Length: 282
Image 1 (cartoon, rainbow, N blue to C red):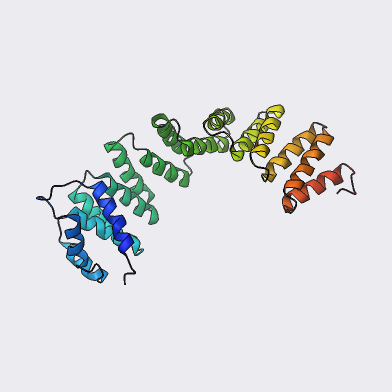
Image 2: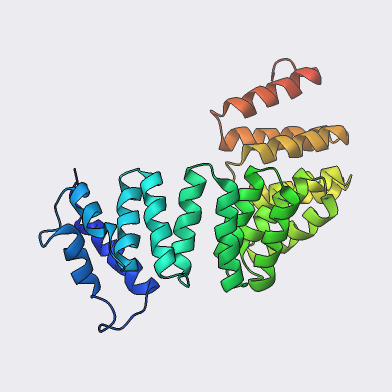
């Protein structure tokens, strides 16, 4: 039933050594626990391992059994093992993370939130717990709560780019444009040279009717990545709306020169040329 699992147990060993602390006199060593569960050769049937751990008071055994069931795509059985591990060792955060993850797999989001709340109770500054909560809130379309979790991460870790970007995207969806602008401006200071950030800033400036700033950021997006075709199209569109046709067509030709086979850009450029009566170029 098992495939070759040497690498898996190396990983499991690292997890357990990092996550649990106990003296040798109190509990068997990790190696002994694995042998007790799986046998000396580490290749036996899962049913035997399950039987061996059923009456065990060793949280190592139940945690490891949960990992095995996870690996075997049996989340219901994994959850039962993690719950038993939690009963035996209620102070270990990794068990709660595993429980939250398996509950998410089982679509038991309310229970997952409960376990993450336990993590946050034990360690209010735990950023991973906030990330998991935010993702659950997004799944439940509770964007305000998700934003609050990302804000907690940023308060603890002001340079966390993923949290900043996620928060900025929530602000855009909720039409909190000024907040989104401030967050994206902070992002480009933290990580200059990323075309996506400049492009998103350009879109926000369009929403704020600050066209010159939008043009500036679309140009920065192109300079950062000449294959970013959306930046060419948005830039050309603004220039055409401002009656700067020569600059707009120059932008489109530059984009086509750098991306000659891009269907979207070819279609957009053809449409622009056609609408301005430049039929041959169209």
